[in-house]
Figure 1 (cartoon, rainbow, N blue to C red):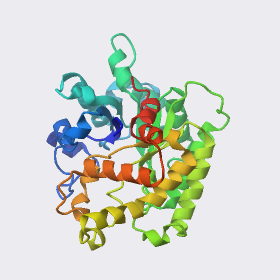
Figure 2 (spheres, helix red, strand yellow):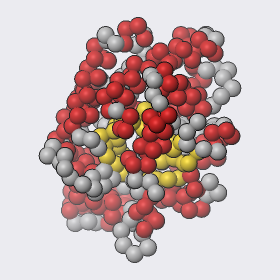
Figure 3 (cartoon, rainbow, N blue to C red):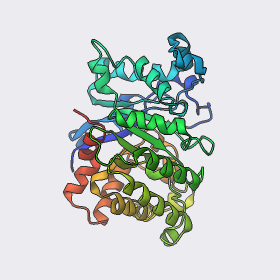
Figure 4 (cartoon, rainbow, N blue to C red):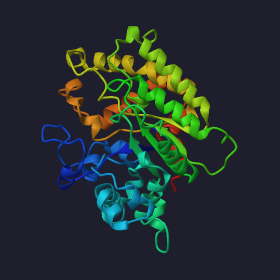
Length: 363
């Protein structure tokens, strides 16, 4: 097996739960998720080749500061409004320096107020303490910013302020991570994202030193469409058309192959099958989508991520008595899909680690 870098995991403690925007006690992810727990899901045979992971923000609560606080750089007001996203960066950066397994943290992709414009993002960037004397370690750990579009109203990503924010991050050489959800939210999310990103990258084909646009989770496709219907389904065809347009917009745009288990059907269609039947069924659901991504973006512009611990939510509905972890299962399934699609060892290495080095400019 090739070496591996996980491009997408989340970490938080019990004490952080009140500060996560999406958590309730009824949520299956309402618990502590630590580095040791994450590593426990990686089998020893894989851990020998495991190089580390990129932490991606977990949607902390925040408030919107006034325009005056942003324009005047009112540090006290901005720190109060963005307290918990700032604390998240501090938490993970601290783990990278003090935790016994901190060496596995290769980079951090925090949230940023991209909806408020480039100046707001610049203020947030400044509050992370990544510039100035003694900040090299912090700056080296910052790999980009993410903003969840999937739960925002129409027009969010297309707004001029959001576009100027994305350009500010991208021109600084950092990753712009965008999360849309075409299954739960609608295809309009992807269509608006494509149009906005096209506007940002227009005329920048020859620019050097730019970052990347990282589209999360295959855009959360509708993996509940029966495999026999996928290739002719209107949702699939519209998704394919949009990602083709997106990929052609600029070579710095990449797709993250992740977030699969949360989108699959959580009913007897999987859980009642034998292990071999189940594997074949899951592969049949996901292969057409991954095949199109590889065809459209090419092997140099796709990266793998586990989306841990989100990958564990609903996993037991598909694998109620499975002896393997969600991480191990998804890693194995992704490998088998690549093999089924005739991808060679070079393409496999690009997906699982080499492309990730370039996307996040890892040392």
